[in-house]
Image 1: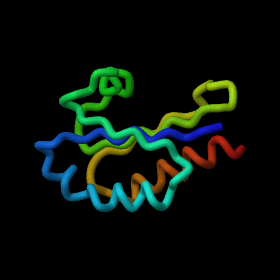
Image 2: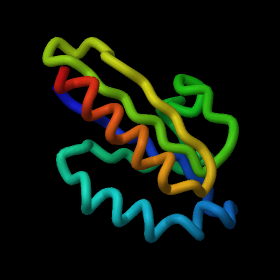
Image 3: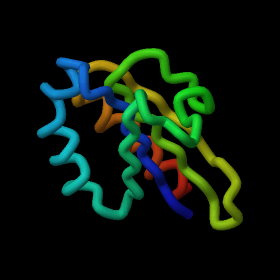
Amino acid sequence: MSVTAYHFWSPTCAPCKTIKPAIEDLKEEFPLINWVSIDTHNDTYKYVELYSVTVVPTIVIVSTSDKGEIVSIEKQSGTNIAGYYRIIRNGIRSIQE
C-alpha cells in the first residue's frame, strides 16, 4: 500500500511561492508519502490532464493497494494548508482500512 502526493505548481504563481514553505513542512511531516513535484509548464507525463488540474497550487493524493489498484484520489487547490492536511490524512486512512 502506498500514498503518492502530486504537488502541482508554476514558477509564475505567487500563491505557489507563498505556500512553498508549508509544502516543505508537509514533506517532512509525512516522509512515507512519495512526493512528486510537477511544474505545470513542464509536465511531460501529462499529470495535469490525468488529474484534471486547472489551477495551481494543487495537491492530488493517490492511495494505491499492494496490487497497484487505486484505492482513493483526493484533490485540494489553493492556499488553505488545513485542506492539504485533510486530504493527506484521508489518503493515509484509506490504505489502513
